[in-house]
Image (cartoon, rainbow, N blue to C red):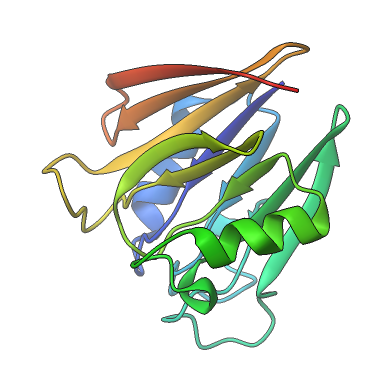
Length: 167
């Protein structure tokens, strides 16, 4: 199962469509907030999506939780958990909801790490990256024994691949 994860597109529906176009057969597309588009916008149709601090429309949920192939996935923007300083509060919430993968944004900093058997993934930003010049998103492959994360540029070039053993 493959999941496309993006965040912080800040009003650019074209980049959302562009990135989705790279993966027409992808199983799930996640947007971690700050799309700054209406909830019902065509570019967000069919996506798992949450509200970021720049999203004004109340239709967006603050959190999204879903299960795919026995893996619980938790999505939030991150601003409510102060992720720019630490992911500790986010990790408490992840444990509380039983998540195995946490997708979040807000900091615009690309990163993936396993902590207490939970994969924390920030796909960076497809509009205004921080900490690097490349605009980014991620593709997560979930299989029986591992989570593989490909960190991609906005022109679909792989910058790094990480594989994490799952419990």
